[in-house]
Image 1: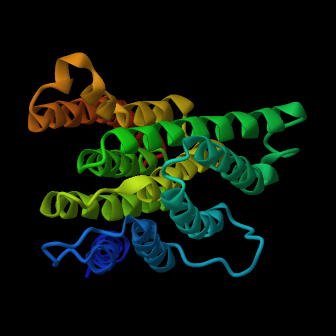
Image 2: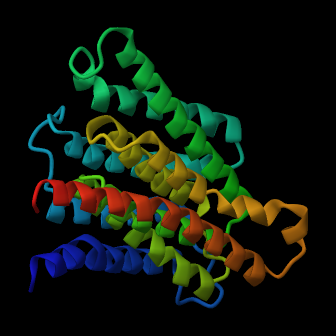
Length: 292
């Protein structure tokens, strides 16, 4: 098996299989009358991702982690717990917002503080961390609102597309490890799509979005801080993920769900391609300049 095939197998295929198996069990999807327990969704997603992280990047050798990639592992474990909490706070959006803000601020500080006094001098370090944490929290909260308004298959489909396309953008931005972890998020998110279509009462839920959006947002702030990936590329990926907002507009609100969903997919794909093409060209130009 080639190196690329191994990375795909361990970093995407097996994590998706693990997540799918756990979701089927937790949702009792085989039962005609069964109503899924969405509180188990973040656990299934997290275990699939953590398996990919273990096989592709490794696990932290101590605490606190000394490598930025290790913080991804820690954050995924915390987001699994937070996802369960969000599930039980589904009817209390204000408390969920505050909890997300505290988690985003804490994890941003812990992961990015090595850059203070090194890459970021003086007050700029605190400003960078505060700005990235605020952006992560704001986008994360928007995704939570979308999940409440559109509980079906569309949101995990869009997040899977953005995480997958974002994986290529991160790869061509010279971040192989973050690219692979973004691909792992795409794999576990993608599992939710066929399961949601199979069982109409199977939705991503507040807890599932808490994990997916939380994890993807944290990958992005690490990409900006450590690679660094240009902010505009991450902002464009975040914008692409908000296409389900179109479903709430008057022209599409009364349209067929399939037509509206198809439009959201097309918009997301168009934005991703608009970012991927110049990113790939810049990557190839850089590789050519160094004679690769």
